Image (cartoon, rainbow, N blue to C red):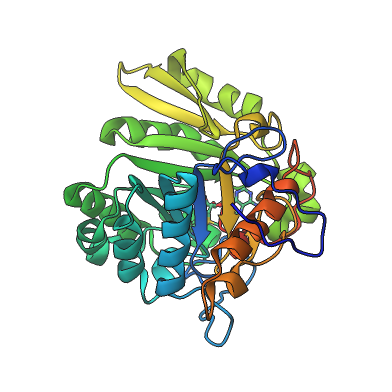
Length: 341
Ligand code: SAM
């Protein structure tokens, strides 16, 4: 395969055998694609202000997204795509994009991370278009705290959305909770009971030093060990589940009332999972991020726009992989909503 060499020191090695492998030998089989910066929520730890629209900003079109995913699946064996944002449901063409991505030969798993607000009306439409499963942000089950945390009085709607998603066959369903000291750490036991009662997986995420709480991160971050101490009083046993490429350290737990649940801890700060990282991230504007916490390593927009140039695209991907560090930096570069968490 001929690589178009860009001005920087790109080597052909990451793509030489047709596989996306970084210089440490970590393969890439998983694309996280942010569809927009816009989101109808404004969570305290994620963004200070609502971004209503991205009209006028350079954005990958459904055609370009399809071309990208076809290229990655065909040349590099990509099998899994997660749509994220911002909130992917803020993108007008979401259903069309799901259909295009799910229709690509070789793509077996199309998932989405969302705030859950549109699921009541749209879960079946997304499922019919080819979406398989979802992760939903749910930081508390307390209606007022939910409103204070997200800027939207929408807990009831999200809970109805969860039911609609299950009814539509979107499964499994995972609940993502970012744990912030002084804000929602006391909600963890209720969230686990709720997950157990509904067979959802509860995932607790350590606050990362990005976004509005970056400067107070040290005071607000709750490490996994503290989360487990908060949960210990309601849990009789913790049985580890093999981690694989999953970012979460997962446990099957038995609760004090005999119920069972799966809990995952996503611990980018206290115990990173970089050695098993198999993902690459592309933002809505085409910027390529080797890591959630790092600077962009170029943009794929030009390679997809006008005349599609697969070799230029490969060269840009190679450059991104070349820059993928052994471990993520500890000072987040960008706002989560630009890259897609
Ligand atoms: N809007 C969607 C949602 O609500 O899930 C998808 C995008 S959101 C940026 C993806 C994930 O990143 C969510 O689980 C969110 O809670 C998490 N997140 C955002 N800012 C974070 C931070 N500073 N630290 C840790 N996780 C964060």
